[in-house]
Length: 156
Image 1 (cartoon, rainbow, N blue to C red):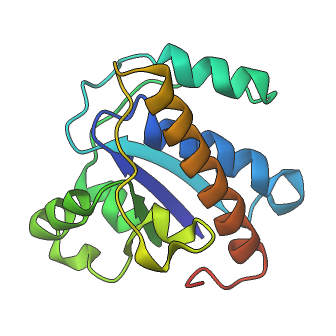
Image 2 (tube, rainbow, N blue to C red):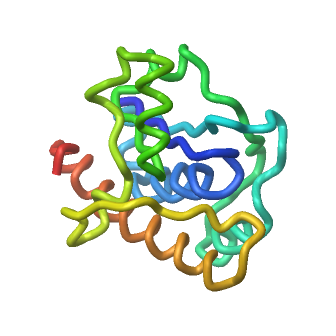
């Protein structure tokens, strides 16, 4: 299964989600899942957000080699599941690639109790509070998503 995370710049939220999901899926699921990320308005080649790198480092997750990239049609075709951070990402992706409909989902849906899923706000350049909020929301959602993927029920 191919999973793509999408946000705006691919330096904070989608990058964090990609790295965390790889960690949660672990080595025992290698080969079953491919995980990537991209941005709807990325500056290709930008390094990841230092705040997110620091968070991942504290969790023992390597961030080596990540550079932001812009989403392309090939990414949409490749992905079986596209997880976005904000509702406007769904609209943008489905307007650009109508074939994406049905495989684009809001990541916050996977936060326990997320039946009223909402945007995961972009913390980039904002206060430490905004980073902690985004990191917490994404971490909770990824843990829940990983359990569902491993048990083979991604729809939740």
